[in-house]
Image 1 (cartoon, rainbow, N blue to C red):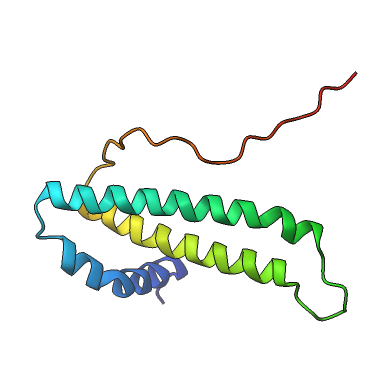
Image 2: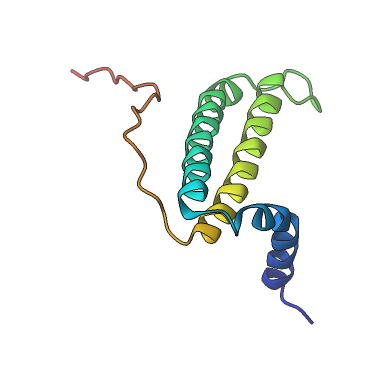
Length: 117
């Protein structure tokens, strides 16, 4: 019987096989450019998901079985981020290395903590 990891990996590979087919014969320079763009997109999606987390935990649903719109927004953002991560991992595997990323300013909000007395 096939292990769960192996089955999961096979499904993962077949789902992303079109990406591999599209990119494996590209010149490294072009594949690196696409991979860098995917890294930037992943960071953007990560930041969006992080920004939606606080409203989700601070606004629980008011009725028993209802899911808050804040939770749905956060879950949707997390799904998008993880889908992008799967794509990015595939691109990195095809490329064979992690490319140098040009300096990108960190646009995540800075957390200011109040000083304690």
